[in-house]
Image 1: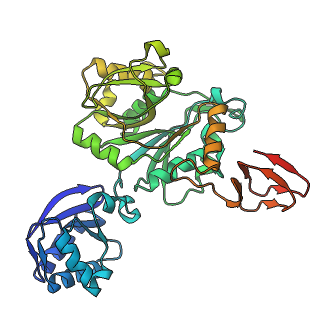
Image 2: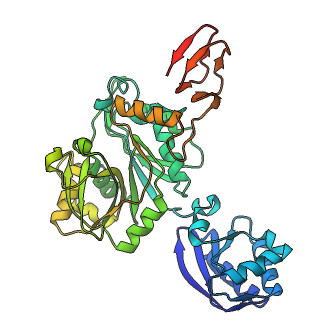
Length: 415
C-alpha cells in the first residue's frame, strides 16, 4: 500500500505504508508511477521508513520498478530502518538500487535537486548602473564582470539551474545590449526581458524603473507570475539552498520570505537590516541604518520568494524599490514576511573592495561550492583555457590568469 505524501517540484514522494514488502508491491508501485507521470512529475522518491521487513521478492520488485522506469523518470529510495538496510545490503541485486539514508540526502542528490524547482520563475535584477562599483562598471554591467573565469550573472544562473529553474526574467538597464548578447549562448534556459531604457539613435539610454516597479510592470503587462517566484540580485554569488527556502516559504504561508545572514555591526549601514520574532516572522525592516540605530545584525541578501498576491501592494508611483518601499508597506499592512536564515555562503559585490575580497577568497578556495573556471597551475594560481604561462614567470598568488593571456619568462605578477 502506498500513500502520496507530497510533491516537491517535479518530484513525487511516495510512502510505502506496508510493514512487509513483497513482490505484490510491484504492481502498486507501477500504478503510482503512471499516475505521477500523468501529473507531469519526472522523479519519484519512495519512503521506506514504515517498512519493517523486506522479502527477497520485495527487493526484486524494487529493482524491477527502478530498472523499468522510463529514462526521463528518476527513481530513488530513502528512509529504510536499520533492519531493512541490513537485508538490502545482503542482496547483490540491491546494488542496482538508488538508495539514500534520509530524505534530505535524496533531495540533495543532483538528479533530484535538479527537479525540485522546475516551473518556478526567477527574476534576476540587473538594471542598476553599479555606481558604487565604478570605474569597473563604467564599460561593463556589474553582473557581467568576471568572477573567477565566469561573469557573476553566470554563477547565479548556474546555481538556480541546479535546482531545476529554467525560466528567467532579466531587466537590463545600464548597458542593456550586453545582456542580450551574453545570454544568447546560454543553453537550456528560457529568458524574458523587461528592458529598462531605450535607444536614442545609436546610443542606449537606461531608465531603471525601480525593483518593485519592475515586478509590478511584469505582472500588470504580461501576467508573468501565477505562482510563487524567486527574486535574486544579479551581483552576488551564493550557494543558498533555494529549494529549502521555497519549501519553508510555502510551509509558513508567508507572503514574502527574505534570505538573510548576520553581518558585522560596523557594516550594517550597507544593508537592509531585519528585526524578527523568535518564530522568524519579520516585524521590522530598516534600509541601511546607522550602527547605533540597527535593530539587529541580520542583513537581507537581496534574495526573495514572493507570492504573486503581494504585487498589488506596489504603489503606482515610479521608481518603487523592494527594500525601501514595498517591504515597509507590506509590514504596515500586516502581511506575513518571514526570514530564511539557515547558513549559506553569500559573496556580495557592491564595491571594488567587496569584489577584491570575493576574488581573494575564491582563489584561496574559501567560497563553498565554487571553483575557479580554469586549471590550478600553482598554489592559489589559476589559469583559464587558452592562457600561456611560462614556467619561468614569477607569480605570487592568489591570482587568476585570464583566457588567452600570455605571461612570459621573466614576468612577475603579485596577486
